[in-house]
Image (cartoon, rainbow, N blue to C red; front, side, top):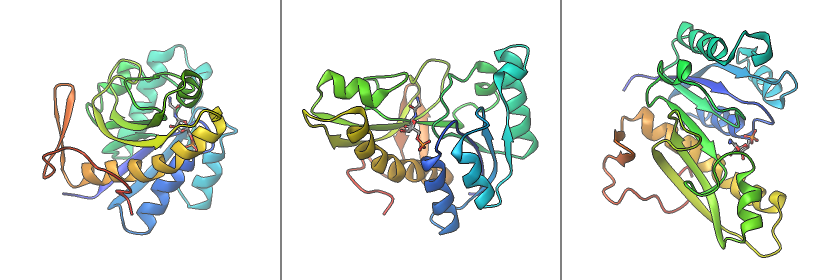
Length: 215
Ligand code: GAR
């Protein structure tokens, strides 16, 4: 497989972005990060990009006529840079078809819950408030629904009765940092095949990764 060119979209701290930077720099991922795009000029992810000499752009929806032109512009910026896989690393918006159709099954999102439970915002809080005993995170391809696309990989963590959004979120985030780079690695090795709603992991007939795949 040829080397991947990643385009990353992030709205906030960017710790998932950082885990992907680290895994490209260590050689675990055979990928270049061409650009970071943020919708938030205050995102710490922008600082992380600067620290690693990664080009960054701030693109805010309010500077565009509508969502369609916003996402069409993002798609153009990514295509201009030869991006082959788009990474939503804490991008807190529902992306629209103008972007999705340009990158079919080539946009990955990380979600802080075991989908299809607790889609949308604050997955960790939804899980903690619900009182689940097992929580976790999901990497999935992005389709036009809200967190409904084909699931690539999930990791589970225990949830305790006194967990808050923060304590549970921290436990989940540690797993996010492992499974997101791992999903990208599987993609780069051509091991992910999408069959309808399902992702089949070639060479792993049980389609299950138990723990710490990125280590
Ligand atoms: C992560 O927990 C990610 O799963 C979540 O935002 C956080 C971003 O953290 N994403 C969503 O909730 C998307 N709906 P980070 O900026 O430190 O990577």
